[in-house]
Length: 316
Image 1 (cartoon, helix red, strand yellow):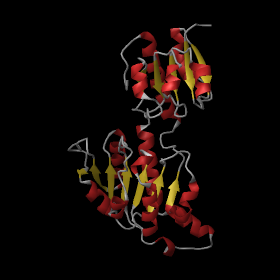
Image 2 (cartoon, rainbow, N blue to C red):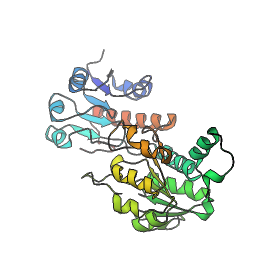
Image 3 (cartoon, rainbow, N blue to C red):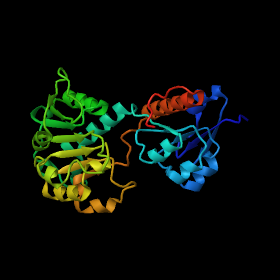
Image 4 (spheres, rainbow, N blue to C red):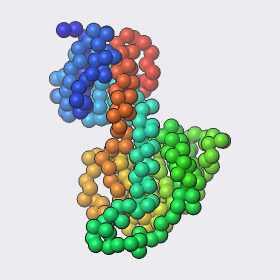
């Protein structure tokens, strides 16, 4: 067995075939661990040269002090599970994979938005309860008579806008950091205009480092009556108690949420507005194809660490 070791922590993959294909030629051993606690991380990864980490393992200063690795590569985008200052002080590189799942997340956002825009969960519940006809789901509107707002116009936001335009929506986009390109068929707008005119509003913005919500009571109160809000980006973007109150008031009328301030989420908080929400378990990123792409890119980053090459997407 090779003396070089790569630890894979906090994943639920059926096998490590993708990682073995990319890292095998470097003569390393892959070791698998749950990484649910500091002791579990160190038991598996203390002598690893590189750590590939899912979202569960937490690398605080004490854990990092017990590692002898060159670097940690996150399977995914977020690095809030890693004490970056401590990693920097110890010379431990941190990298991530941010450019995977673009199509999957945008598709999930639009799919859940359309389910609520068409009021399909309500129609299903009404039919199962013995109702018939359209009286219980009025009013319904065509996409061509409606406005969709996209908040955050990076890769995923742009893909969501493309899908929404294809369905016939007039699309407005707001981004504080990225200019909306001319020729996309999308009009740049203020956040206030997006919220107040959007029949569908989908969030694809990064979270504020301070944890401040992008949509609090005032912003939610400006949303169009009867509208649909979708969040597949960061749970911290929406003030959850404010959203529950806003849903009860009908501004927005519906919300599709795939991310939450704390995960796994306590779904009991949604019981008062259960007929107004569509909840999914942080799955927007997932398809077989997007998962494989993420794993290939993470393993390739680990290979660069092992070879001493510049990282593709370093955070530290």
